[in-house]
Length: 438
Image 1: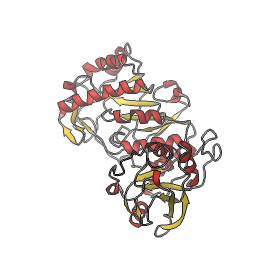
Image 2: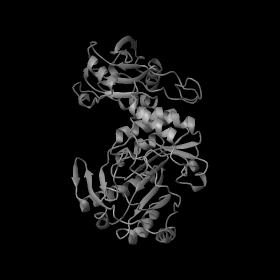
Image 3: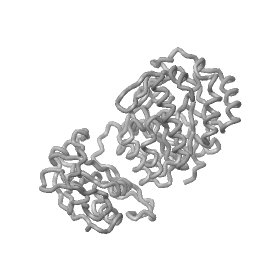
């Protein structure tokens, strides 16, 4: 892994190394007056646009196609089309799976910064190397002219209050990322008559905070946005502002306003074959993902540089064989099901490794069920959860009838209504340390 091979952060690498954006984050938590998110316009090249939306598993299947077609891909990024942390679970699941399957890849996310803070440690845990944050102002009064609303928790607030909340969290995000030694790029959309007089102030503040590179992005008229009649700023103004901002922080001058499904070198035209593969994976249900590509250094490796066989099965924890109702830490066995028939079919039961081995217990479990793609349990400790996610498993903490849950999973239906409510009836604490239920 070479941090210099990110084509956006290092202009010298943009002719040799490419990137791919995986569009797994459709929802957004703010409404910018310059933005209009359309998912189906392949003729536009700007942030917020993608031809398709992928699930994390579909994204992994598509990524395999990209790596095969573009072996100089050095960066896997998530840049929307909404905000990665308005879709935090999907974003982190995707990044975790990419890191397990492609340990040499740089990982990058592009965000507005509103809701990244709860995920900072998770980003560091999967070795996310680069983050871009769009900060258009360091003055909430100016921000009130840029944002229509900002979602604060479950409540949407108006322009001025929203701009204050957003700025506070953006600055905290930059600080938190730099404390974790994650490289930070700040994008600022240059909006004539709104923040053009303020742009150098933004650069000065970012320089004080140790931002690695600053990107003044001239506004491009976006049909359907509140600013659709605003003119694009002239090139001379952009050059002058970059020259002034250079005093405080290094400047990016080669930005291509990438789409949320961008792929290849920065200067590459839209690759129709890969766009077709993106659409294919977005419209094709994946009954099981491919197992991750492990290497010798990984304790569950099969062989370096090889991709194991597909995973056709689902593993679940049940007390009596009818319900998914058992915590992984207290299960003695898992029931294995095959989803590839007309209806889900029972295969066999498999014993879990004995408690008391710590992390090795969960690594051994991964080997025991390496032909499974999903684990269904009523609960799971944080330690086994992280280990098994890193091994490529999808984990659902749910309660429900086995037949109904498996059929919903087979059809790709949401399982959100079955999510387990946290309980502490036993009076113990489920630590997930591999020693059994405490």
